[in-house]
Image (cartoon, rainbow, N blue to C red; front, side, top):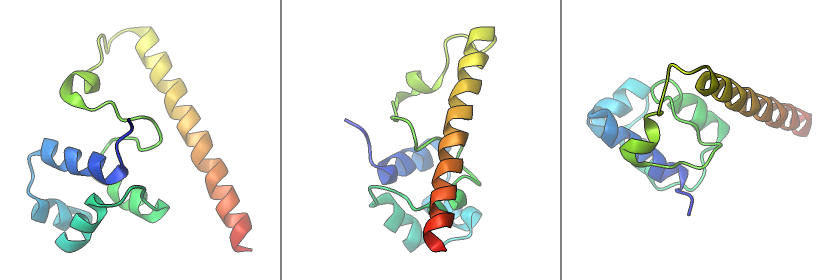
Length: 107
């Protein structure tokens, strides 16, 4: 079962070791708004952009959670970085397509 975006964010805030107040301050949003984000199933593009300032996680792939899933087996291997590059390229292309669709819809 895939976690909601809010659950992912809550877990990342807890993992960071910062308080909710400090995290909200660092993001330039209110603490109340951060708690509101914790309850959302999906984030808007604006929310994702705001959160990307502090958190290097992806919302476009299934979040595995757990500390073991976030630590790659061999970060120095060429295959690891090739897969990482391909994953990021795919996510970037998806974001570009979504952005182009939004721009067309606003016209």
